[in-house]
Amino acid sequence: MIDCRGRVINYLRISVTDRCNLRCLYCMPQEGVKLLDHSKILTFDEIEDFTRIAVSMGIDKVRITGGEPLVRREITTLIKKISAISGIKDLSMTSNGILLSQFARQLKEAGLMRINISIDSVDPVKYSQITRGGDLDMVFNGVDASLKAGLYPVKINCVVDKNSDEPDAIAVSHYAKSKGCEVRFIPKMDLEKGSFGVVEGGNGGECTKCNRLRLTPNGMLRPCLFSDIELDIRKLGSQKAIEEALAIKPIKGGHNNSGKFYNIGG
Image (cartoon, rainbow, N blue to C red; front, side, top):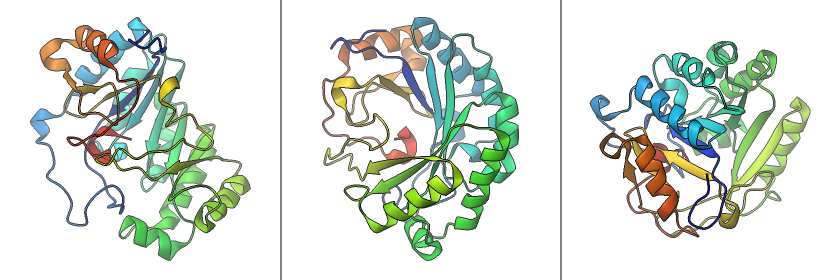
């Protein structure tokens, strides 16, 4: 697929839930948020149908996100449905890792190819502060379980204030290398202010090379993370929503006043 700026679009990020079992400082307020009514959230069949059409149009890379995708009930059923779609070359997930020790093997057996795990500090106290109560040992167990299950490559996502020279980032890098994991450093972003940077160790944040579309839990297709543009796939139909998203995908991210990381998936 080619968008209105001549960019090849082959990457679909699917946020399957706005719910999360952590309250990270940069993502969600301590008191939580008003959650979507379950009736508004896309069913697995709706997600599968949309993905199948997207793949037929040129998508070959799919990532499952949240919220935290592992809190979505029967998530492995969805992975099995999507992995069965012919034409997907890369099926991955981003997780905070808290539940991965329970799910890693099941995810691999369902067809998930690889996993990204969010770790912003390897200091248990600092990690608990950032996530407002997260247990770092559970995440470490999730990393080990993912490696054992064969979800290669296991990538560590580390949010940084500016760059990878920060103490927490350096420590995360050492941990990742000790485990044989890759690491990506993601500059802290602000949707409303429109501030973002280029990901170290990845290709996010480079607008001229952007190859992504994003589907929210309630069926809104977003052509750009830093934009309020969204298209309702239930009203428009999958193919038309994709075609319109390609026609109006911004050349560069601006501001997003209607979405949050927990319900778009980053």
